[in-house]
Image 1 (tube, rainbow, N blue to C red):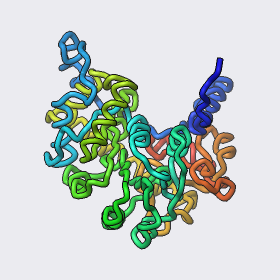
Image 2: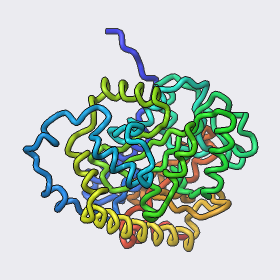
Image 3: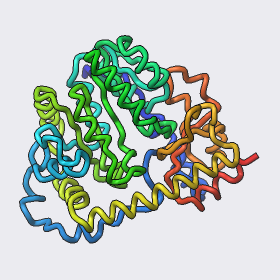
Length: 368
């Protein structure tokens, strides 16, 4: 049998998770799983929402349509874009990574250009689709030299992964505007942002001013629904959306109907909105305490945070992956998140979205 090889690697995040779970079983002792990007402070309470769904209805038992339920796309416009986005420019996707992959397939560019520190799956997806990979050092470089990125797709990730850094919104929009003037495509990937912003956040609404912007977002990340595998994509180019819809059709023929109905009720009903608010309040509070613990105990990789402390669900600490695993903490070496891996092997990315007491219990032995 002749096989078309992907030429990609199994995710380092997946590998370290498998290793940690195996050690946990062999030693019959719990590990703190900080290798993954899952909000694990609390679960979002969806029991009441789920009980309100009629599972025998056609809303659940019939194909939901490739683009996603119209009522959900309208609710996304209302919830994320203050009602100003055309629902026809929104596609419901089976999670953020699927949205990214379809976006990469959908465009013709010379390269995909990432932040200096980037989520490793960006690189693997680019390799899978045979697209060259570049990196930019910071948004100031993009603002100052936008013409360096001609015929490239520039990805802006905020808050960042792996560092969890928060860019100033003025820098984000200055960079996007400069790239727009040069007719350069931008992909905005901010799946964790809504965990930390209130309902008045206008990022998505303001992005409507820039037709060069592709938005990929994930309900999985911002609502604690990782198991449901659901997110959305937005772009104002009708041909882009039509071709993305065709790719989605032949990849999945649409997204799970229950997940769509669940998200619709979460973002469009008062009971659902309250469940989201409670989840985000408790999650962001624990994250802030955990980041302060890292700072106060000299664990944070401060050299990576020149302008601000981390705000997202990730942070980098000054400990090797192996040392953390020896202390029953699963983490991923920062060498996985850069095109210059050897330089950062003494640092590790951890997820800080876990209960504060548990975080302190496992991290305390590392304090020197």
